Image 1 (tube, helix red, strand yellow):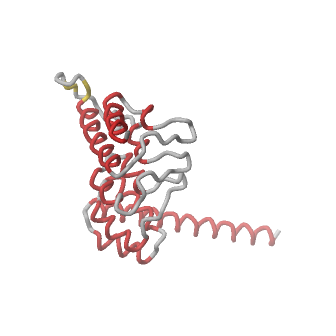
Image 2 (image 1 turned 60 degrees about the vertical axis):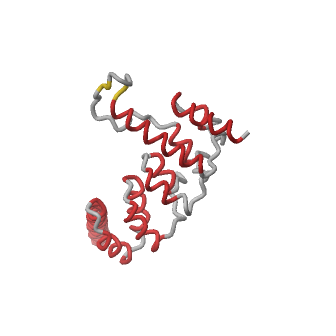
Image 3 (image 1 turned 135 degrees about the horizontal axis):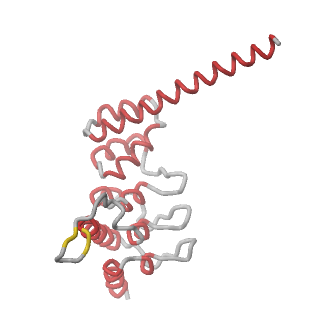
Length: 201
């Protein structure tokens, strides 16, 4: 009976410690995110230097929201060669979230046709993107007959596609699903991809 009681106490203490560590981890993540949003690179660097585990987490957050200055500081500590569990690189994340400045910066160090675990390139993720994905509500633009957010996203997507293509991205790279950017793109982006394909011939 005493033995079982001892194991129960040890188990409770372990659970309590894990819970405390969990709370500390998420508190640090939130603190880092707030610092990035405010452009406070000093705080972010301090957290990462203390524990490099946070480096990739903050870098992917910065890539997603286009915080280029934060990225410039963090890559000095972590390097560019980091990936998510899905195989996505910083370039994949920046391109998918239509962050032009971040894409331009990352193209200096990451291969333009780098693939994730599914064989998708950054160009594929932009071409295949749902341009309505960031619409919280739709404001209709009569002039171009589409949601204003979609129109803005389309302009951003075109710019990023053009940037990737100028750096030699292949619009005919087939992923593990048998799809390629040229076939998955919306009509407006497909027209741009075809134009570059014709130039290559």
